[in-house]
Amino acid sequence: MLRDKDIKLITLLWACGLLLAACSMLFAEEPFVYDDKGSRNPFIALVTPDGRILNLETKSNSELILEGIIYDEKGTSYAIVNQSVAAVGDWIADYQVVSIEKNKVVFLKKDGEKLELELKKEE
Image (cartoon, rainbow, N blue to C red; front, side, top):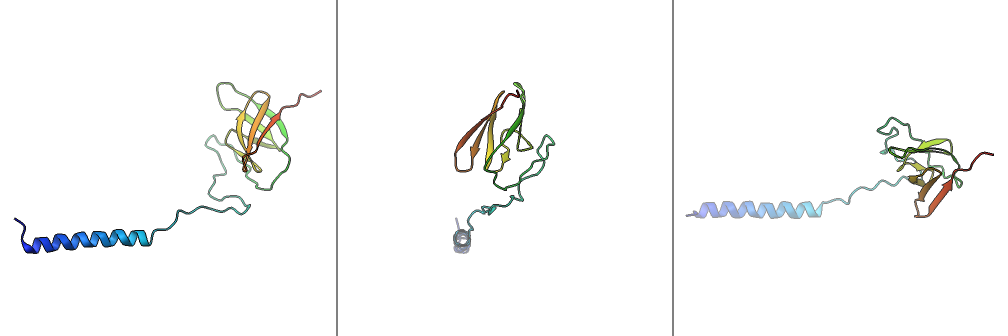
């Protein structure tokens, strides 16, 4: 049987737990979201896991120029855009590479606009 002293101790511990929970809610911070304000996000790695150096210049190029495609059906394909080598998921200016196909590259702009560039054959 619980003694009066034990009940008081349990009640005190329960009250402390409630107080701690209330304090944690009171002082909880909103999750941090980095605002790059047009600059490069310093939290993004400059080297990919496969050893490529990324060009993350955020200067907005209004025109993307597809210069070449290194296509591999069974592996990772690369596109050469604006003198940078990019894989799926990489960013070139304001565009993210969505897919790399044999003759074209599909991009998605930050605002959701889709852009497809086809590789032009040399004459």
